[in-house]
Length: 141
Length: 141
DNA sequence: TTCCATTGTTACCTAAAGGTTAGTAAACTG
DNA sequence: CAGTTTACTAACCTTTAGGTAACAATGGAA
Image (cartoon, rainbow over all chains, first blue to last red; front, side, top):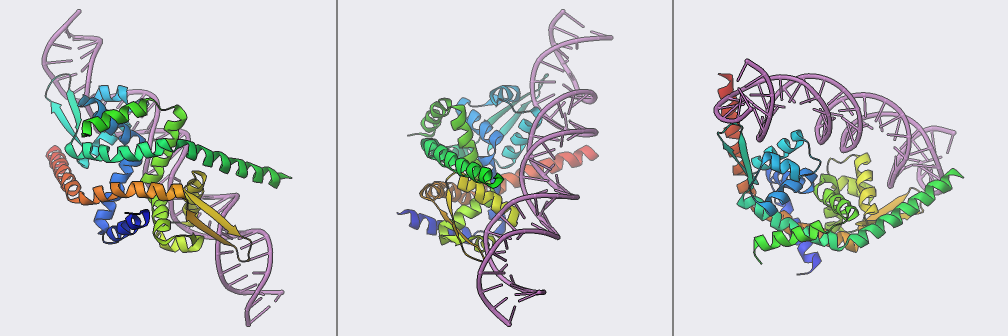
């Protein structure tokens, strides 16, 4: 299957989407693009079930508020599960669901593809930035 | 290769990333999660090279400002190319690069995976929302 | 009794995203 | 000469994202 065939097949699929499906797709893709969500999914995938405070240590730089928010969103979309134990002090454990593990497995090829091309990306950026820089300094003369 | 093996392999890769590579990866993933960028990549993939105004018609709902911004970012990362013809009125054409086409081809399996599971996602959401609703109305009594 | 540990929530504030509108350049048309 | 067309850029404003910090709940430990 060539690239062209893959792309035109995807077009057919996307055109047939209901508005609700399209929104759903966008939201899930949003998790993929969001640093915190992605970090949470990856951490839970690598280290398995974890409690809140441990996750906060692991996901460097996340605030309590944003971690809570990310966890709620991921839970709502069925990507992680939350288990609360009726203890004092409270203990809550988070874990990837089957669906969440599936998503992670889907994302990883994309990651590795990007990482494998990081030189290409870097070069493109350098080139672009240099041309832009040249233009602005010309503009000042 | 099992899911576990895939995940632990990805962990090894991600741990070895330099800070710059990690930032690059995050930026590219950001394009994947961004509605406008994604729309642009998809449109250019499906319909080929296009000029600005045509793209704006195609990407429903995008403002001129955001379309410009998205195009600049994608160009900077080497995913699309910009060709400006010295005519009046101006004509500028955008096209996916090889790299951009490659990214699109990588994203499509992720899309189809999500779309194929939209029922699962919907159910998860309904369940979550119902439980939450129950809790808040309890709280009001 | 007072403090601690843990997982939150809420209020408040700043920074960033993004929309709307107006302006620009420059040749062609009437 | 005024109007049109295209691809922007700049200014202004509103909405959202996200950070910080304070507070809540509670049984056990000191």
